[in-house]
Amino acid sequence: MTRIAVLVSGGGTNLQALIDARDRGELGGSELSLVISSKAGVQALERAQKAGIKTKTIERKKHEDIAAFDHAIAAALSEEKIDLVVLAGFLSVLGQETLQLFKDRIINVHPALIPSFSGKGFYGLNVHKAVLEYGVKVTGATVHFVNDVVDGGKIILQKAVDVLPDDTPETLQQRVMREGEWVILPKAVAMFCGGEIK
Image (cartoon, rainbow, N blue to C red; front, side):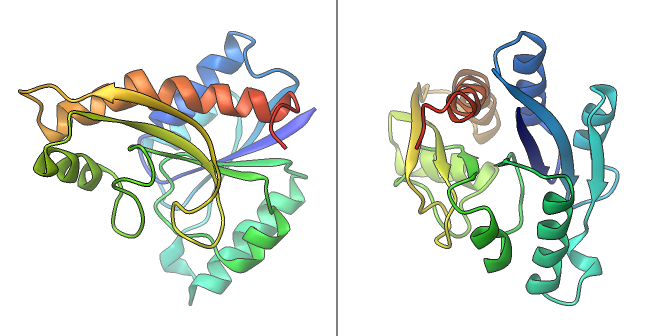
């Protein structure tokens, strides 16, 4: 049984995609064991509680530096004997302790086709604004392993999504989530749990 922790910071739509996939029996031999939020009172925590998943809030602002924050995350993950860490709209950068402890066992979903529109500062609506400003006709989503370079780890899955002429950052964000992120994130998790990814 692969024990999964999902790290969140907001609404938890990608978490919900994982919960729905679990409920459909699509996550193989795995268990959504823990949801950690970097912010208190976010909707993602409500989604987790409703789905019967243990939750923990570890706020960045309550720790003196990134190392202390990262240590608290690493300790929580270790305590729950987590096998796979999924970053799903987690708006903090992990530190060396967690990256080393869970090397090749942390995956992230990014709302663009890496290496385009990725790296520092490219998150949330910023990505979709940049896509529209640049005028590309195709964007998408990427699931990748996490290393110490922001959005720099090996790519697991990508899915292309068309940019429409009348798109706003908000409409594009919704389509990329619906057609991209919510499709490939559960698939990548199932592949990891099924031993298809080395």
